[in-house]
Length: 150
Image (tube, rainbow, N blue to C red; front, side, top):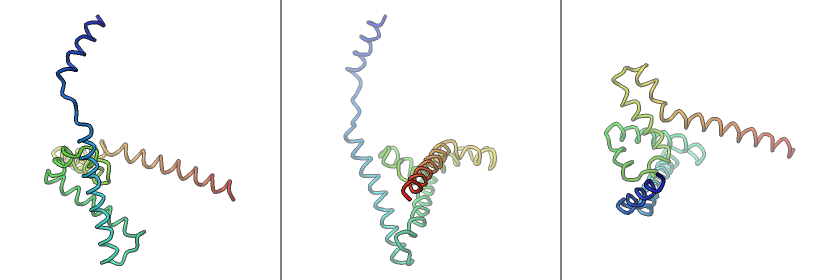
């Protein structure tokens, strides 16, 4: 029985197209880099025109990227970017905004509370939980390290 399975797998493997791993990595790198470059441009814009410093310009920059991503998701453009770039569009904060906005759009027909509010965090909820738990653990390690060093 295992010989038949192995024979079948080997035959399928010969006809199955090989995924373009290198090209996918290049696309993800370029699109992710472009998103980050846009973010850096926005941060420089806030520093230059709104008198923020480097520390305080991060919050409006992230908020602007989230807004742009949510708008592009609503217009259906971010999905095409995600199809092209893969992880390059999913890893930055714009991917997080896209996952929340797309879930909200998908479940809007079920109502504001039972549709949008309950389903919006299905994709992004685990990211939020992991981020909070990781921040807590890192904070406790830092606190313990500072207490030991003083």
